[in-house]
View (cartoon, rainbow, N blue to C red):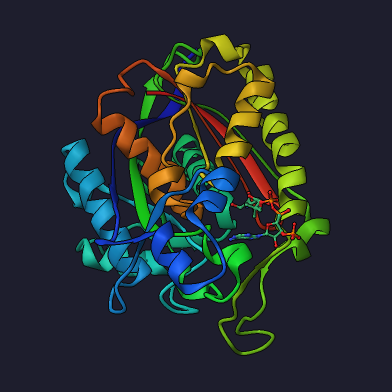
Length: 325
Ligand code: UT7
């Protein structure tokens, strides 16, 4: 039996130059480096310049991913960009990326699943490629959450940062076994009963404003580990793999305590966990491809490795993806 697999050809990322440390935040609001580090693991985050938009971060990440893949942008026929902080209400930020890359064929669109956005976008692109309608995809997570933070709300403003990451996927024929390279399985979930626990209090269709991020942090925390581990068990059940088989666990980087608790519950060894939350904060849809790019660049992730992604965020939305690199 042969199957089409979405194989990763390359990845790349971009972080804005400006680094905002916990100490700087502590000078502005009632918080401390100690509190932030102990409760979240975050030490610093990057903040986009005023004239640096989500599309600008996405374009740089996409260019880095194309260079890493060693392919021409013209061979891309699908761009799926996950963001909750688009440049404009419309058009999609993805078409700005498409235009900047000089591509005027194929299709580019945005997808919004907040912090789960990258796993949702990867799944969407994988389905397009496996359906045979498209051949090469750019999957991007790009965010400027600094624009939707209430900088007086210490419960949220210390948590988030800006950045972008991207992967290039190619449809390739494979044997159709779990030994294949590429995306092996994906599992997405959502449950709108929790929509008021993490939301933005504005929007074009309601307040006609952009609004600010609001979160019942403790409530989100309470659900996170259970939801994350559920979809990872789904990935294990679908493939027959166990925690022992995983080479690298690259989770959404929201809070080190959530990541540690999830890995512990699943019996994933701590040395297999890729952590960037200390340096990036929570960059929502960008956090997984940002962490991935770090682990690929420093030589940890190698061809043939089994890489597990997971994310959970507003909606709630949550999901997992298992990829053989
Ligand atoms: O990516 C999308 C998913 N989002 C998440 O996964 C976030 C999930 N939630 C969390 O990560 C954690 O709930 C937080 C990091 C947001 C908060 O940690 P926590 O351990 O749940 O703290 P808490 O909200 O229970 O607050 C404990 C105390 C409170 O004071 P009192 O009521 O005990 O006097 C807060 O007012 O900490 C206080 N607090 C702060 N203190 C210093 C809240 N924010 C801060 C702060 N600095 N920045």
